[in-house]
Amino acid sequence: MRKWRRPARTVRLRFTVLYGAMFLLSGVGLLAINNLVGLGGTQVTRSAPAGVPPVEPATLAAATDRIAWLQAQLSDTHAAQSRQLLVGSALALAVMAVVSLVLGRVVAGRVLRPLRVITAATRRISADNLHERLAAQGPADEVKDLADTIDELLERLESSFAAQRRFVANASHELRTPLATMRASLDVALAKPEPVPAQTAALAHRLRAELDQVDRLLEDFLVLARTQHGALAGRTTLSLRELAADALNARAADIAARDLTVHSESGDSAWTRGSRTLLTRMIDNVVDNAVTHNHEGGWIRLATSTEGATARLVVETGGPVLDQEQVDRLAQPFQRLGADRTHSGPGSGLGLSIVAAVAAAHGGSLDLRARPEGGLRVAVSLPPAQAAA
Image (tube, rainbow, N blue to C red; front, side, top):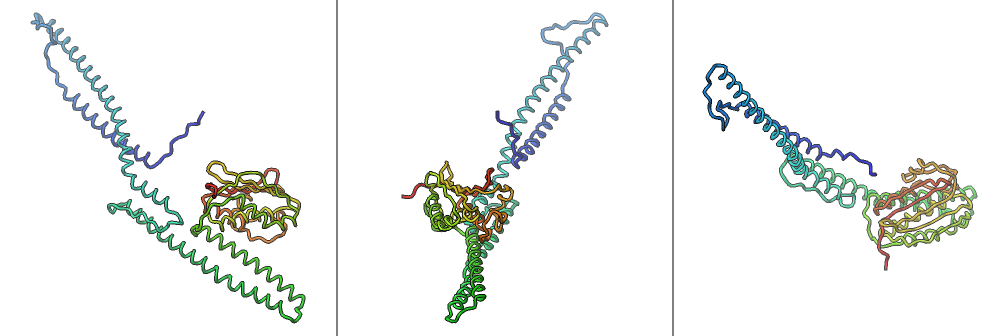
């Protein structure tokens, strides 16, 4: 048995009740005036009922009885007319109530139609088509002022996103140039024919490792920024299963070094459509997270499937029992679990946030679950596509 749910209190419902109540009160007032006029203006004619021959009263008593009988007849006739008028008024009031609600709904819909148009147009506008405007037509009223205000807001948002894209493009060049220069200087210093002191060589190797870490962090920043604020270009049909297999092959050395067991469950190819660069980076991050944040001799389970309107990639790992509240925050930048889950490998805390951003940019989602028996379950869902030829 379905549980009854109270309808949502929308603006149209409130306007319907308001307009319906106004129409109904107007009808009640009109009926009240009509009843007062009708009852007050009822004229009593002192004529004998039809079919009764006039009788000449012989005595005063007979005349008094005759007058009393006529008054009783007139009172009964007046009461019958009052009852008929009240019944007619009640029926008219019921019909007026229904008509008032219908008219109120129609009028409310007419009044709110421009707002519905503005809402639908605003929903169609996203970060990829901020150049579109509502451009509402009509008289200079409150609705047009609202549409013009939204257009101004969209213009400011477009300018802000354009500035962010320019910043990403400039940062990609300006920040990498000094990093490359410092890395080249270290290489030149270590490549000199003169013997390099051991302490200097160790310092140079450490600085190079830190520069590589900064370079990876910068790359993560750029990918995250381009995914969140840039349009997807070069869409193609890809198999999540093949991308995952490529990512596992690329990390084969690390998997063997940590003695990890990979279980690849049989499933379909899970075809989807999107940017090859971004989807490859997304799955690389998922596999890298499963390899890096695992214990020695652990395992990785990978499965792909297509269910209805979803192409899904699921990667599970073993390990200690995790807190679901902490796991929910892993999709945010710079969020990491405790050091006991890692093997002291470097990480920026941007891996899963990039996965979430890439999935959202493709119309999908990222679901992170702490497994009850321990470990983490990472599920990426994307819109499916037809298999590539």
